[in-house]
Length: 394
Image (cartoon, rainbow, N blue to C red):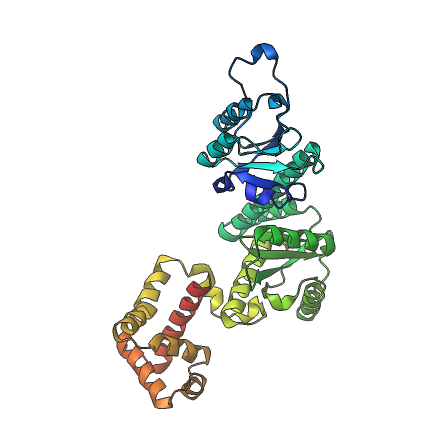
């Protein structure tokens, strides 16, 4: 995976580049930066210009070869497009503006062309910065893919341990995970900067990773926390989360259980993610995995076929009724379940009479067509509502 031109425009060496053509091609990927600065032999001036670049190259040039013949610019740009070049940056040594036919052609082909000042960036800096950014992105993408494997694949303990050491050779034996989800959108570049800052401060035996808009912090320790494990774990968590430079109020945070062995890293990651999701559902700042109750079963399986069928047979029927009769049974049921099935508290929360809430709950019983006990009905409704909240927050 390579950076796009749009991402490259945010780099220090490119931030002052002026886009003069091909604005619809900014999603093109840059595999590397290359330089086009040679002067054609006069004896070849009557022959077609040959360019020898690779697909995804971002070409930098002063157009020295065309300083005495502007017509060569269009011909060379056509060659670059044919080569699959992602874009062109022109240093304004010989040209402050490009011929109109070049601009027109670049716009037709969605081929980005930039101009930059001769007093500005050096070629070598541009090449190096693009190379470094691609290297960083590929590293992040690789790590993100490995996190995905640990979250989604069933792996034996030996494979998990090997992958953990591949992440960080300095990881210790004990492990727990912290998962943070920003409450407001953070773009990939900003999230990567946060990851880099975290890794600067965390220390060798801990590490932060990005995964589809969320942050995992893997915390590892020597195998020395056997006595008073619960108390010690709470202390370690407090020390870790309050040492972060982040404003914790800006995140939903999930904390995994404490695992004695690094070969359970996959469980730690999943647990912290599930806890984070429950924190998001319940509008809480921090949630521990051991606090999430039946969500421990629902989170890993909510998308399985049998769960989808259960969801359709419960919440699906309530939705159909609400849509047909313009009622609010589902919203009432959500509050009812969140408040533990208490009619009085539900009525107070949504500003309705208790009899109205009772009528709506009885209507749901009719929709379910159940002869189950009150406890069994509430259990079924609560599971359906929790599945609904998961689907809303995933």
